[in-house]
Image 1: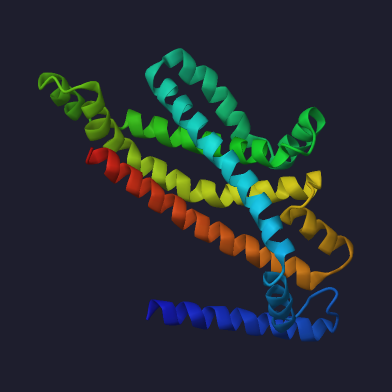
Image 2: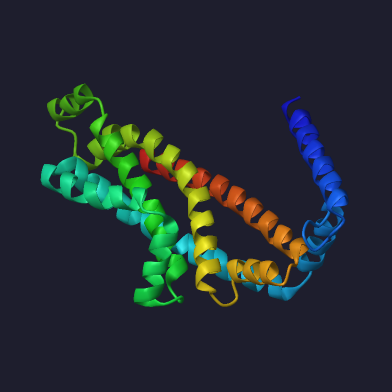
Length: 247
């Protein structure tokens, strides 16, 4: 029943889209759903499409992985040392507060467009993962920590049975948000930086030449890929958690 409702809602939005396209009467400004799907189908059978998709996904995912690793380390240090908590907290707050566009411009000024997608993707993820890890450690049950000390548990067993169990819900919640934000920021970096051979650049050219069908097609690709990768990341985090628990 839930899936039927969702399908109906999607169909209603498609009808509204079609009516809006017919009212404008200009495919250049607002392509119809049929035109967009036809354009998307044509893109899917070209080798160039997969090359562009691969480059963007690799840049964004490598940045997200780096951001996760840095965020985990920063979160652990923030929870462990009060001085680092205050010091790293300033950097985390800056990353949360400043607009992504400002970071993109700064990265372009300092390092050029080659690494902008990787760096921006990492910078978006770092504060989220840092916050998740820190909150998870801070909210870990002290009674469980004391119990681990009483029974003289090894550091590894304390980590996986006490701290990891406490951190896991927080970090997975942050990962769900981080995956979508990372993709949006990464594509924005590609658009502003005009990174050669990427989705962002294709969207920029589509806007520049009023190719609304291509623009909508690439937007659909970004949405679908972002959702798929989000599900994959959460599944991998769950599998990694289970593997560590059963070592």
